Amino acid sequence: MKHSIDDIKRWKSYGFVMTPVENKRPKGKTWRKDWSDDELLKAKRLGFYHKDSNLFTVDFDDRGFVAHKYMSLLPDTFTDGKEVNGKIIPTHLTYKVNGVAPPKFKYPPKASKEEGLILETLRSTQTTFVGEGKHVIKDVPPIEADIDDLVRRKKLICFLSEVERNWAKKGQRDEAFLRLQGALARLPEEYSTDLLEKGVELLCLNTNDSEIKNRLNKLSYQREGLNKGRTVYGIKELCSYLGVKEFLSYDLFKDKSEEETLWSYPCSTLNEFITTEFPPVKFIMEPIITDRSFNMISGDYGSGKTMVGLKLALCIASGKDFLDFKCKEPHPVLYVEAELPSADIQKRIESLRYAEVEERINKSETSPKDIQDSNYFNIITRDQLHMKGIKNGFEYIAIADNDQVAKRGRQIILNTALKIYKRTGKFPCIFLDNFSILTAVDENKSVDWQPLIQWFIDIKTRFGGAHFLFHHANKSARKSASGSNFALRLADHHFMLVKQGDDEKFEMRGKSTQSKWIYDKRRHIPAEHQTFIFTCDEEGNWKKYPNLTQRDFTIIRELKEGKTSKQIAQDHKGDKGFGHSTIDRRIAELKKKGVIK
Image 1 (cartoon, one colour):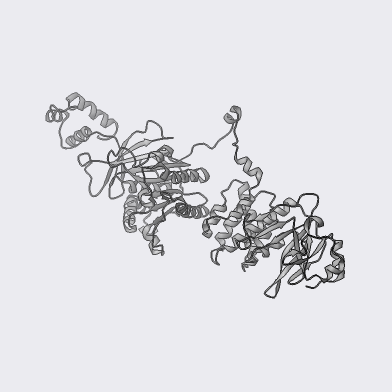
Image 2: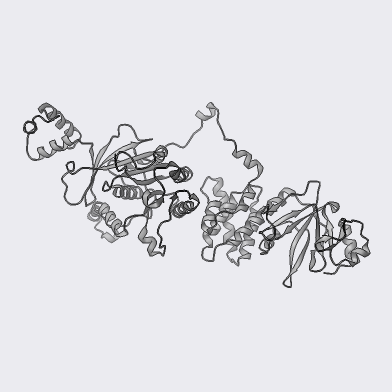
């Protein structure tokens, strides 16, 4: 663009203190400011000094020209640009200093143009604006802008530019927009809904998305949800969905006051604390499973861990009681079965539901095909992943010395749970079966357990629900879960399952599960609930018994054989605990507990 003497006079009226420019620098060894109109007219390029002109310039340096497409988010003012492939593209917006120091802004803060610089504020050098490939696009006096508002808008441009570079493909954008809007909805009120909606609209236009109205509606809905305490997606969920480690530009939204707030906690005086109404402890299954809890179930091979887990999940999902534990109401579940073949799990579920289905068929005369679980029960197996093309199966949720990779595995499970949450309105209880298959850690090192356990605690605190981690028992003592006791210290409850020995088992037809249920750790479970024995036969019938000793089993078996207490005492003469009076007392106790008639 060639300039005229009228142009020079007009720009001087704007307050421009101009200089001829050569090789991107003011002409001459010193930065002269007393160039004549004739010298300026003859110059191939012109620039203006920032400080002397009382101006500053927002310089868009994005080599991919993505950020430039969001320039309209900034207030209209004097605008210049350059010619690229025969097309004139705006690159600079110039504003008048209004008594407040021009904002120091550069993002990324240490990047050059070659290293991905997006935009920066030029405050103390000069801006080349006309001549040899440079063009004035909007020739108006620079305006005075609200500095704080201008900085907020520049931060938003940087963020949206990074998002657009990593944006979802068509067909995946509904979920992507839901997460983006959630991340934007969390910004301070200074970022008005109108401003954010304009940014989203530009993203739609830049990515050829025609569903603009539908996209914009999500933002006000998300902000309303946050104000009402509903769970709303955030930046972590957006990053996970787009497969991005992080959006560093989102950190621009954290101002100093936020950072200072993070270094203090909202403490209460004694009076304030005791008069505050906190959420009460609620039971999902009374009295053993509470809402907002992290639970561990461990046991040796054959102790029934998976059978118990599946039965608990089925009962929680359908609102049914388990043994003599009372389910308060139906609650969605997500069962992650990482080890067993799907066909085995199908058989186990069929067995667990056999008695229930038979009862319902007899009552309603419906066929088994009519018996449907609610959509509250959700399960993922390794076979399902393979059938969907995920050949490597489940991603690890804990990895020794590489938690960055494990975060992805945990996030995938969380994303799956959030889909169920969106569909049902309740965050599901997560069952992870089991630790050994889903992790690659040294189970004896607490540092390897820590990220996973903290993740569980974060989930129960943020979303509620009762969550379960299955683990094998200590191979030597079988008195606790294997590995570090770090997890046990942070768990709310730990249920140990110990299978009955061959000489302890009940006589039951067909294949059965018979184990002791031990409360290894309890937080909300009343003390009167002690170790008990449970059985499950192949037709899905569950029974609970008091914790019986080997002597009890001997007495029960021999009574079934028709012997009297006197005959039992005679047959075991000399054996400890088998005196006639002792056997009579024990029989009375077994009758009282309902073990024998």
